[in-house]
Length: 253
Image (cartoon, rainbow, N blue to C red; front, side):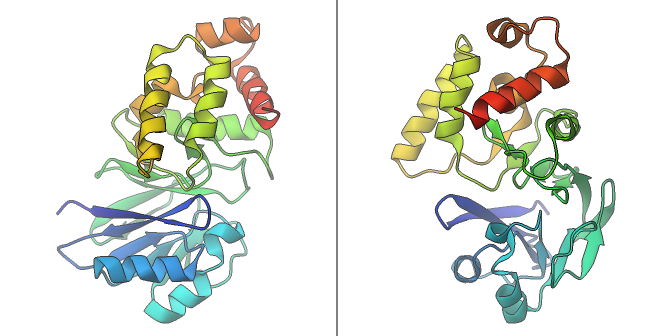
């Protein structure tokens, strides 16, 4: 059966997601940054938690993990190169595991952190990108460097266009304002910005998105675009250098 998803917010701008397989009753949670919100989401849905998928070690993704694991007995899956406590199974780039009959492929995307792990369900066409890729944005580079982050984003660029992308933060309006500063003539970006402004006024989430939409409007994935290159005065630069300039501008925006 098709997986079901329930996205919930916590803290000021974080998102968690429950992944439910109705035929087996198994449920996975992506990250556990806040125990109260996580347990409330389980109560709201009536789903029983069997797995917790941790994308990286930052506290807003792991602080609730001990309490949620203790309350549910869930198996915790996380990055192989991180010292996150309470993790039962650890995976690295290209590793696969099976959740409720659905294959999940792990995609390591260092840059924001060195342990960042994305959970990709290829047969279901959905990926959970943590703090690597956001709607109209990408994660700030903390532990890695910009060439590393660009190499990580290229792994996501290679995914099928129809892939549904769940990210971990509601940063979209700020990302949109920046995106328009480096890609001002992009009519699709202009339309999406208006749509997102209306969505946020209604209290709606701007995640998930799709890779197709992001390839059309997210400047961090569009380093090869001639219009962006011309706007930045980097027509002859490498894609990596263009990305680095865009990321630097966003850091100072």
